[in-house]
Length: 139
Image 1 (cartoon, rainbow, N blue to C red):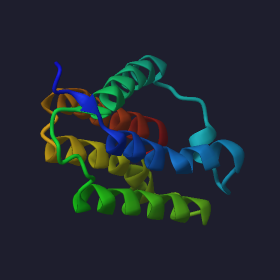
Image 2 (image 1 turned 30 degrees about the vertical axis):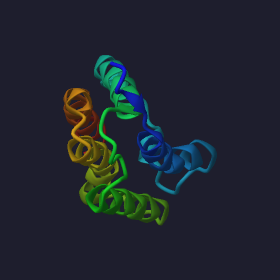
Image 3 (image 1 turned 180 degrees about the vertical axis):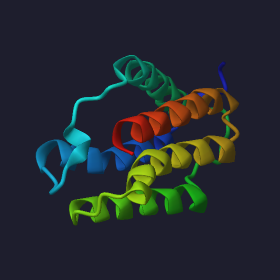
Image 4 (image 1 turned 180 degrees about the horizontal axis):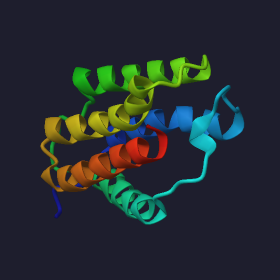
């Protein structure tokens, strides 16, 4: 336990992934289907719990090389592209899946890169539930 240190890169990855969500809370997009009420509230709650566990696990690491790798950055950029397309009114299955899968992949890839095996399980569960939420509610 004494070798575990705070990982600023895990926190920064989370903050960057949340930026479009903060904008979405304030600025309504045209054809904004994401504001509809969820038909999967129990699953959503479980996903949020695993998201919190995942982020906490990513913010602590034994690995000294915790920098975010290119694969996580590419996932993050593609996620931002999906948000831009969404705000331009493109609401299709590819954009919706991108909005729900790409941030999760960024977290999962990062957890694997830094060999944070404890974060991988909640990342996988969160990814599956978050993607399921998007598919069930919006596709």
